[in-house]
Image (cartoon, rainbow, N blue to C red; front, side):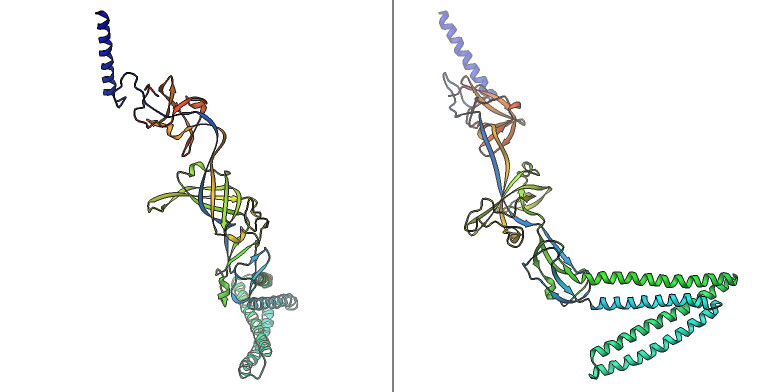
Length: 464
């Protein structure tokens, strides 16, 4: 009788326990004697894990730069054509420099004239007793220069009519024109010098200072004025010489001619785009990666760049040189908004074809026009980034991991039951999760439930 009573109590207690478990939401179905959840198990294993991500990108052969004109003039010669490879120092095109050369010659003549005036001034100061007498000599020089200018002007006016009628040659006409301009410059200089000297003498006399001081300041001013004019003309000559040099436009680096707007121009002005080149300083590849990938990329990480043309793969090794700090919004292939981060990679040994296949695989290229990389600036490529690479990683299947309240767990199998264990995820791929062993409660050789989304799995459940 007592034995039966005890059995009834056990049955009642078991039933009550099952009701409490169901009410608490721990299980999803009623347990019966010997019931267990059927699961698949997996071992916590050490593996070599390497995960990559491939994104379409493009080649960039050192970037592009523009050649803008620094001078004005007619286009005299174009020495290159589009797609030509050029080297630093090669002549690209030439602008007619005749106007600059003429201006430089005029400035040199002006310097010679001013230096002659300076010498005459010094001699005149010694040979005249006063500034008034010196001014009279200047007025005579001015009159002589005016007469010479009028004569040259008459000859020039006549030459214009004769040249228009074909009675004199272009050379004769240009000679008379040059004489006219030279006489005009000499007359203008002499007149200005006389007028400025007279004005300065009047100013000194109005100040009421003694004659000796007037003489000293007047002659000193004359000398300083001429010296300043000479220095100004010499500075102009130096600038004109620089402009003449810039009429011959040469490449300042190795590169390839991408576009040549100057070929369609007859005249150029300063700042006008004349030529565009792609440089060869550094070969690179660029791509826009998803924001979910960008956190796994860092400067220095390895990159593989592959270009496929006509069944031939050209593969280069490289490393990430820059990861932008911001993302740009775009549209996915499905028409949805997505954000991507721009990444640049420096290509190593870009003059050779590493691991290439195809009929030209043995053709080692060198930087220049023959290099496949330099000649394919802007071509599309596949860029493969290494997201994770560890030879001895502690892993579990991705399906074994679940998250509760921001903490990652797995269910270990211990004595035929599910035991929840905390883990720290180091890296997660589509099929594997790499664990930080020092911060996880499972270790190599432990057994875990492979698919934790199996119905009926909870802490302590019996497993089969």
